[in-house]
Amino acid sequence: MFLDLTNADFKRWLAGQGWGTTGFALLDSMLVLGAALLLGILAQVVSRALIRRHMRRWVERSRTRFDDMLYKKKVFSRLSRLVPGVAVYWVAPIAFDPKSPAIELIQRVALVYILIVVATVIHSLLAAIDDYYRSLPSIGIPIKSYIQMAGLLVTLVSGVLVIAVSLNKSPLFFLSGLGAMTAVLLLVFKDALLGMVASIQLAANDLVRIGDWIEVPKYGADGEVTDITLTTVKVKNWDKTLSMLPSYSLVSDAFRNWRGMQDSGGRRIKRSIPLDMSSVRHCTPEMLERMRGIQLLTSYLDRKIAEIDEYNRVHECDSTRLINGRRLTNLGVFRAYVDAYLRSQSRIRDDFTFLVRQLEPSTNGMPLEIYVFTATIQWAVYETIQADLFDHLLAVLPEFELRVLQIPGGSDVRAVADAIRPTGEGTRLPQAPGA
Image (tube, rainbow, N blue to C red; front, side):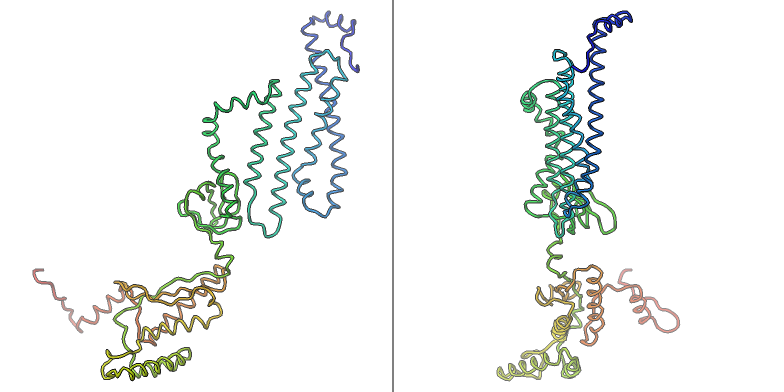
C-alpha cells in the first residue's frame, strides 16, 4: 500500500485539531481522489507527448489522406485521454486500502470518464470519415446524414451507459422505461426522426446530391445544394442567399432537380414567337422567286415546288385560283427556314428533341414554338445562344411578309391618332350614339 492514512500519530493529531471520524474519512477520500487525479494528469501528459511526437511524424510520411483527416480531427490526441482513466481504474485497488469505499467511487468515476472519452473519439472518427469522403473526387452522394445518425446513436448509448454506471444500475433498467417515454421522445425528436427517414430515402433513391441544382417553389429555393445533414438541406440560391430546407420536405413535397440536364450536356430552349395571323398568306411567284435567294431555302423550295406542281398536275387542279390545289404559304416557308437555320447552328444539338411547331391559335396570335436543346449547360452561354437565335428570327420576319403580334404601346396609339387627325385645327373623334 503506497499511501497510509491510518497512522495512529496522524490520527491523534487530527483529533487534536477537532477532526472526528467523519472528518477523517472525508479527508481520506479527498486525498485519495487528489492522488488519483495527479496520477491521471501525469499519465495524460506523457501519453499525449508520445502520441504527438511519433504520430505526427508517421502521418506526414504516410501517402494516404485518411490519417491526415484523423490527425486533423484530433482522433489520436483524444484517444490518449483514455490513458488516465484506464490508469486510475486499474491502479486504485493496488494503491489504496482494499477495504476503502473510495475505491468503488474512484473506479466508477474513471469508468464514466472512459465512456465519455470513447464517445468523443467515435465522434471525431465519424467527422474524419465524412471529411475524407468529401475529399474524394466525383463523389456526390452525401453521407453526412448517416454520420450524424451514427453520432446520435453513439450519444444515446453512451448517455445511457454513463447514467447506468453512475447509479450502479443495469442499462436494461433504463431501457425498459423508454417504452413509457416513447410519446415524449417522438415529440422531442420529431424533426430528427423525420429527417433520419428522409435522409435514408434521399440517399437510397439518389434524389439529391451535393452540387445538384434544385428548385423548391414552396420554400423559394432555387440554387445549388451545398450540404445535406440529418435534418436540413442547405441550398445556396443564385442570388447568393441561403435556404435551409427540412430534409423531409424533399420527400413529402414536389421539387425539381436539374441534375438530368447537367448530366446530359444539353439545356432546353422552349420559346415561341406570336405571329399576327392576318399576315399569313399564300406565296406568290414573286415571293417564291425572292425567297429562292435565301441559301438555306433554295433546295427546300426547289423540292417543294416540284412536288406541289406534280400534285396539282395529277389532280388537274385549277391554278387560276389560289384556293385550288396545294400552295406554299409564307408561314410554312418561314417554319422550314427556322428548322434549317437551327440545324445549321453547331451550338444546337440535333440528337435531342428538335421541334419547330405551331401552337393553338388564340387572341394572342399564332405562336410558332421552338423546342430544341443547346450544346452547353453553362447558364450565361445558354442565354446568349437563345438571345442570338431569336434576335435573328425576329429580324428576318419581314423577308417572309410576316408580322409579330404585340399589344399596342403608347407610340402605336399616338401614330394612329396622328394618322386620323387632319392637318391644322384638330377635330373631335366621332362619338358613339347617345354619348
